[in-house]
Structures are given as structure tokens and as C-alpha cells.
Length: 337
Image (cartoon, rainbow, N blue to C red):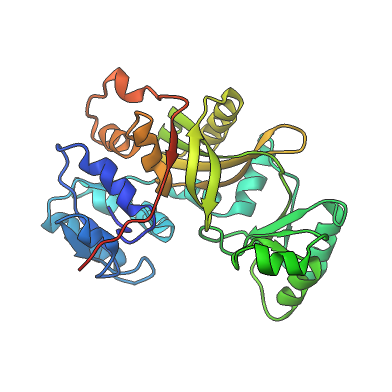
């Protein structure tokens, strides 16, 4: 398991440790990643951007007789997908989707265009690279009468995501919102974008309804399990309270998206209800999601199921039964070293 220092690493490690059949090695570029202190087997690996990333990881797998690589880091996905054959020649499986699918899923603008071309509903959107086009897009999507969102086409977590609204009370924002509030005025957004070169942006309509994270298990484009959970409370974009709800419209919608993209393994989707009452996609995490451990409490160990699928190990019917209605709450915990 790479990404041993990721926010979701402790929970995913808990899922893996629940099955004594698997011997686990945790890896991270940070020698003091939290995963080091939660599991005996730990290795330091290069960053995904390093020239020797694939070579080092492959060498580690051969040295420790590792059969499956489970990456938690988004930046590792494409390099691993492009080099799957190298690992396969050593009888090592890499739990990632194929490169063409990943290239679409990782780029939010490409994802929206891809789904729109296949008649799958997405939020109203524009793709912009200049301040002039940004102003035009915001206006065309209904501002100032309506809120409008924007985010970089390629980003991790909530980096770069903002909601533009024209009724911001600066005093209220200063004293009642935490510094990481996602709200911003149009004037402030334009000022920041004018201050330098900015990346390609996806500008979208604001979806006002409930937001769900959806943890999925997919077998080369065939959805096996789709598990929606209502996001009741979030901290820095990470779910800390939620509930598993059997929302059929979300399950059917995600089924179409997963099949269209031909994804594989543990996949996460974020969906939100529009003003018209439809659940529409926000983005895809084409990897195991950090809060996937919550589904463990609802009766399904999705990381273990993905490993069993990859290794063609038997899965009992009860392993696929979700305890709908399960609620969860997450909290911080310390390690000492």
C-alpha cells in the first residue's frame, strides 16, 4: 500500500489488516509517514515525479515478494498504469485502471466533456484559460443571480475549489467561518487570477442539494458494488460524519459513469443534487478513497474485496451485503515515536 502518510491511510490499513491472509507492506516517500507507526512493514519510496519511481517500486516488490500494489496517491496512478506490463512480467498486479481511462478521470474538464458526449448528465460547465473567458463563463452560468463554482481541471482534494457568490458578508466570513472557507466574491477571484498565470479551470453551476461520496468496486468496467454515503459533515474536504443510504438514482447514475469510463478496482465518485433534483457528478477519484473505511462499518470491506478480485480469490455473498442505514463519525488519533 503506497501513500502511507495520506489522510485516509490509517483507515485503509485497518481494512487490510482485518484479513489475516494478506501480508502488508506500507510505503511512502516520507520516512515518518503515519503508516510507519501503524504497521510493522514499512518502506520508503521515491515521489511519483521522481525518475526512479517505477524502478524503485518494482525492485521493492520483487525483493519483498509483493503480489499486488495498491496505490493511494493520485499522482502515482498514471505512471503505474503506463508501466503495468513491467510489473506483470514479474507476476505483480497493479490495482489501477488503464491509462486512457485514468487520463480522462483525473482531468475534471475532460471527464465532463467525455460524459456529456455520451449523453450522461453533468452540471452545466465551461472550460476557461483566460480571465476574459472566466468572466464570460461566470456570467453565462447565471452569476450574480446564481452561485457559480470553479476549480482547476487537474487538482487533488479541494485545492483551488471556490464558490462564487455575490452576497458575502465580510464580517460574517471573518468571524464565523474558518479560514478554509470555500466562498469567495467574484471581485476577489478575478483579482487573484489576474495576479499571475493560472491553470485551466472548470467553471460549473452550483449544485445546492445533498452531497454523497460513492465507494465502488469495479471489475474492468463492470460495476460489482456501488455504495453511496451521505456526507453530513466535512473537514478540509474529508468526510467526518455520514450515513449509508440506498439511493437507487445515485447507484444507477454511477453505474453508467463507471461503465462508460471502463474503470477498474476501488473507485470513488462525488455526486451532488442539482436544483432540478438530479444527482450529478462533481468528480471521480479513480483510486481507493480515504473514507472507504466507513463502509467497513457498514459490512463491506472494499479494499479487501478489490484485492480478492485481483487475485481471483473466492468472495462469499455476505461480503457484498451493505448494512444500509449505518451511520459513522470519524476523529483524530495520535501516534507517538
